[in-house]
Amino acid sequence: DGGITQSPKYLFRKEGQNVTLSCEQNLNHDAMYWYRQDPGQGLRLIYYSQIVNDFQKGDIAEGYSVSREKKESFPLTVTSAQKNPTAFYLCASGQGTDNEQFFGPGTRLTVL
Amino acid sequence: GIQVEQSPPDLILQEGANSTLRCNFSDSVNNLQWFHQNPWGQLINLFYIPSGTKQNGRLSATTVATERYSLLYISSSQTTDSGVYFCAVGPRGNDYKLSFGAGTTVTVRA
Image 1 (cartoon, rainbow over the protein chains, first blue to last red):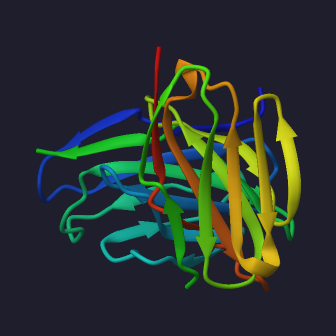
Image 2: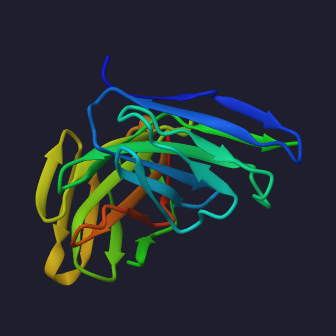
């Protein structure tokens, strides 16, 4: 099936640890995105990549890092520098100038 | 960046009722999407509608780009329509980022 997968679904982390969230797509989309959602709020953009080996900071990039070594994969690392990492993380992909975006099922990260 | 305002923030409906959700945005856009977030957090694409009118079953949407607003209509609401509805817009040009509104939480009661 075509789509976007994220893993794990739930993730628990101790303070001071880095964790990596996985995002894979088989839609052959060039662009991929990471968003963060806090309870009762809309989505905020963390990082995005419009092409392999290139990515840009979004509105809230501090404390996060990404890589884009393959077209289908865009992992997000939440570092210990992120002050308040507990949130719901959503990955998306899009294609073309209209850039309609499609979302994965999300990862819920909880810092203990 | 583009500012996106959604109204109302909360909406409670009786099953079978009709409703209208509004999205105002502050600048010209290349992309406007409506999403439904289900109770498990999944964002479901409803419409890609930077301008014009579209219909999909009981849902329809209209975007008036020159006046910088979009409307989502829900007719004959069902309990499965409950959830949060988000409007997201992307600016003109080569910037492919989406800016999201805060959402409208819809509760449909049986």
